[in-house]
Image 1: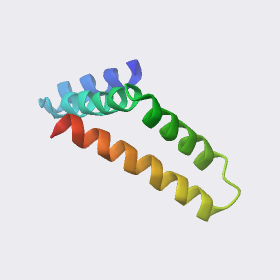
Image 2: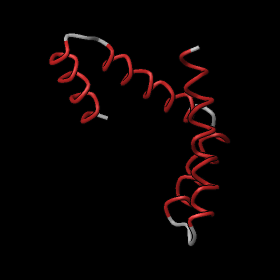
Image 3: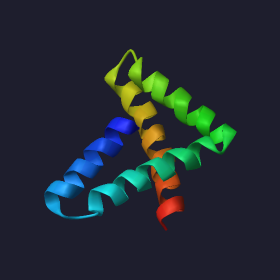
Image 4: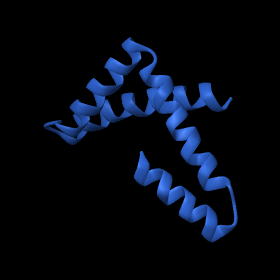
Length: 80
């Protein structure tokens, strides 16, 4: 988290825009949204683990799609 915050702040300074900081905050808000719901967090982390340890590309894609779907829903919930 700290590395992401540092990169976002550096990019904001370089570009003169707050957009990198807003993106950083939106990302972490989505992570918190996932974690505040135990069942969603469990599904998210399990799918992420299985995607990273999949035996085949198809299996990896299936689990990665679950991760993306859950993240997208949480991101939408916090950003409107």
